[in-house]
Length: 89
Image 1 (tube, rainbow, N blue to C red):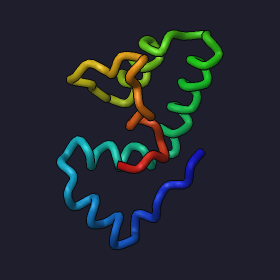
Image 2 (image 1 turned 90 degrees about the vertical axis):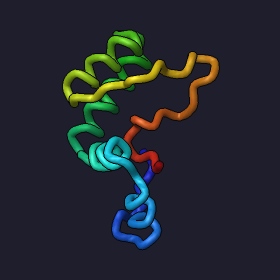
Image 3 (image 1 turned 180 degrees about the horizontal axis):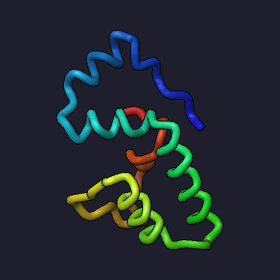
C-alpha cells in the first residue's frame, strides 16, 4: 500500500484548505484504518472473482455512507480509483 503524505506538512495543509466538503470528507475517510481494511477486503474479493465490482462498490458505499452522483468511468477508460486509500488528491 502506498504511503500517504504527511498531513501535517504545509503543502498538505494548503491542499486541504482548497477542498470542498466532499473532497475534505474523502481525505478524512481514506485515512480511517477501518475504511482502509474494508476497501482492501473489497478489492481482494473483486480480484478473486467472488463478487462483481458493482456489488462490492455498492456494499462499501452502503456501509460507509458514500454516494456517487455521477456514473463511473467505463472500464476501458478507468483510472486509479480516488476511493482507494492511500491515494492523494
